[in-house]
Image (cartoon, rainbow, N blue to C red; front, side, top):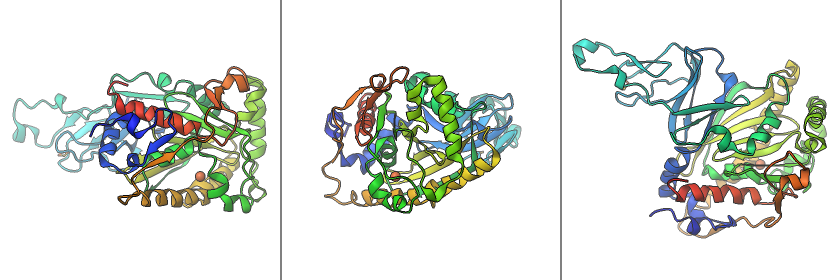
Length: 423
Ligand code: FES
Ligand code: FE
C-alpha cells in the first residue's frame, strides 16, 4: 500500500520500521521518490580529464554515462539505447568521440544525439527522424569541490541549495589546498548483501559501533580508542557529519607522515576559520542524503556510494581521495592506508560488511521483519553548531560523539520524501 510516514518512521525519527529494509514495495517507491529526485554523486572531476572522457555508473538502479562532451561540458545520459534499450556503453571508463550501441550499432554523439543508423535509408526510408531518438539526458549536472552530482528531477533545487549548510563543511574538507582534490587508483567496486540505508545511516553518525565492531583494529594499534569527545552535526535535507574533535589519531602501527601534513592543514584552516576549525581537521565521516558517504580520517580519505541493487543488496563504489598538491610519496602512503582499512579487503570494511550482512539476514524471516529499530541515543542534546563552535559553523550539533541525532535526521528526511510527492 502507500507509504505512511508516521507508520514506518516515528515523527521524531526515534523508531524505524524493519519493513523499510525488506519490502519490495518500499524499494520501488524509493527508486521513484528518492533516487529519481535527489542529487546523486556520480563521480569525481579528476576521472574525466579531457573532452570525450567518460565514466559509467548508476543513479539508483538506472545506469548512466557521465561524459565531458567534445565541447568540454559535463553531461549525463541514461545508458540505454533509444532503439531497444541495450547499454550503449559497456566500459567503466574511457575516452571516446561517439557511443556505438553494440546491439544494432546506432551511434550517439557525446552530446547525446543519434548521429548514425546502419542502412538508414534502405531500412527506415523517409520520415525517420533521428533528432527525436537521442539518449535520454539527465537534466541537471553540477559540481562542487571536484565532486560531480546529477539529478533526474527537472524541478530540483540547485545543487548548492540541496546541500545547504553541508556546502560549508565540504568547502572546509575539499578546498584546504590550492588545486583541490583528486581520486587516485581507480574505483573499487564490490557487493554487500544489505539494504542501502544501513551503510548510509552508519556513515551518517554511527560512532557507537566503533569500539565494538572495530575492536580488533583498536587492539592492534591501528587507531586510537574512541572517546565521546566530538560532534554530530545535521546540516538539513538528511545530510550530516560526525567526528571526534580533530579526528581519531592513527595508531603506532601505521605512521605515514600524513599526520604532519594534517597538522599543517589544521594550522592553515585555523588561520582561515578561527581556532574551532582544528576540531574539523580531519572532518570525520558523513553522509550526503541519500547514498553518498565520505570518510576523512587522520590516515586517508575515501568517498563511497552505496548503490542500491535490489532491496537486500548494494554495490559499493569506493575512491581514495587525496589533495592534488600533496607529494607523490605521501599520496602513495595514503592510498595504501585507505586500502588496508577501507578497500574491499580492508580490515574495517570487512568488519562492517560482515555485521551489515548479518542485519539483513536477520530480517529475512516472517518474524524478523516485524517491529522497529531504535534510534533514541542522545535525544534532546542538539543545539545550533555556532553555539558550541562559534560562527561560521552552521547546522544543528550535538556536543557528544555517541548520539543517533544524525540517523534521526536522515530518516525524518527520508519519510518526508517518501510521503510527499512534491517534497
Ligand atoms: Fe541499440 Fe538497437 S538496441 S541499436
Ligand atoms: Fe564501521
